[in-house]
Length: 591
Image (cartoon, rainbow, N blue to C red):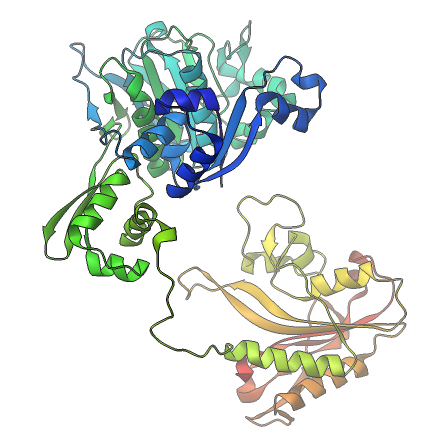
C-alpha cells in the first residue's frame, strides 16, 4: 500500500479545523484508511540518511497515511481531504466539467508515426488560471511522483510532463528521433545536452538512472516539441527547463505519454480532478486535441467520464451481511463520492465520477457501502450453512507420500518456485526449456527470472549448500512446477511433481530406482508392461549421463518423467563434485 506523508498544518488547512491525533486516527479508520505513523520531516530524514542530512529541516508534524493501492484519488492532500469531507457530509461531491474552448481553438498535440516504435500514445489537458502557493505546488509535484511509482509502474506505462503554457506555444508535436538529433536544456540544468549526453549524465543520478533503461536500447527516443521547436520534454526521462512550472505559473499544460492508453486516461483524470480546485473556475478543465498524423484519428482529452452502474440491494446486502433499504444504501454511497439514486424496487443507479477509477464491479460498490456503514457496526453471527473442509485430492495424496518418503530416510527440501533462466536451461543442458517457461516481466534479481519447469535445480542447489553434511545426502521435493499450456485461459498450468536426488561417492542408480519402486508401490502401481503397471525404458536426455538414463512409463503408456545418473556437466554447473542419481516424475496421473 502506498503511504502519503502530509504535514499536519496542511491537513488542518484543508479540513478547516484542527483535528487531534486521536480524532484524525478515528476519522481515517472510519473511511477505511490507517494512520500509519506521526513523524516529522527532520525525524524521517535522520532515520534514513543520518543526523547531518537533516540539519536544515523542520520539526513540523507529518501524518503518514496508508492508502489503498487502487485509490489514486487519495494520493494527495487535495483528494484525501475532499473525499473525507464528502464522507462527513461537510461538502457536496463536485461536478467536474470542461471549460469552453478558447477562440483560437483547443491546444493540439500532433503524434508522428515514428512514436509507435517506442511510446505510441499521448494524452493532454490544460488547467487555466490556476493559483499555486508553496504547499499546493509541492503537492502537485509530489502527486506526479506518487503516480509514477504506483499506476505508472515507474514510468514504464505512463510518464507525466507538466509545463508552463505561457512559455511555449501550440500546436505541439510528439515525435520520435535519433538520440543524437535531440538537443535541449533539461530541467534544473544550465546548458544544453543531446539525448546521448543526457543518458551519460543521468547514469549516476540516484533519481533518474532507474528510468534510463526504458528507452535506452531503442533506436529513437520520444520527444515533445512546441510550435517553435522548443523541447518540452523527453519522456519518460526529463522535462525541459524552458517550460518549467513555478509558483507564478497560471496556465499548466499537462501531457502524459504512454504504452498503455487506459492507464494514461486514469492518470490524466486523477491529476486534473484533484488540482482543478485551484483554478479560477474550480473543477473546470480545458481539453486538448490529439491528432495521430498517420491515421488521421482525432481524440480529445481528458475524458472526465461519468459511468453509470445498476446494482441491486439484495446483492449488496448479501455480500456484506446487513439488511439496508434502498434509500439508506443510496445515502451511504453518496458519502463515498458515488452519486446513487433509487430507480426501482431493490434497484439503485450509481454514477461513478472520474475520480473513482477503482469502481469496476458491484463488489466494489459493496465495499464502499461496507466502509460507509462501518465495519465495526457489522454484527458477528454464525454462518447460515455448515460445511466440512476437506483437502484437495492432490494435496491429500502428496501428504501421504511425504510421510512414507520421510519414513524411508529421505529429507524433504522446500525451494523457491522462481529460479534463474540458467538454472532450468544452460545448467541442465536443456536450452530449449526456456521456450516452455513462464518468464517474469520485471525480475528484481537474477535468481528469480522464470517460474521453474523442473524441481531438480532447487534440489541440486540445496545439495551444494549442504556439501559439508555427512554422505550420502538423500533429498526429495514434492511441489508444483509451472509450464506453458495454450489450452488454459492464463496460458500456463501447475503440475505436481516428485523429485529426489542421491548424492554420494557413487551415483547410486540402484538407490534411486529403489526409491521409484517404493513410490509406485505406495501408489498401488506394480512393475509390469500392462495398462495398470509401470516400467522404465532406456532414453536419451541431455540432463543425464549417456546410457544411464531411462524414461518412466506409467499406466496406459503415459510418460511420467525420467530417472538416471546426472551428467557431469550438470553436477559441476551447480558447484558439486560427486556423482548424483536423480528421478523426477509427474504424480497427477495417479489421482
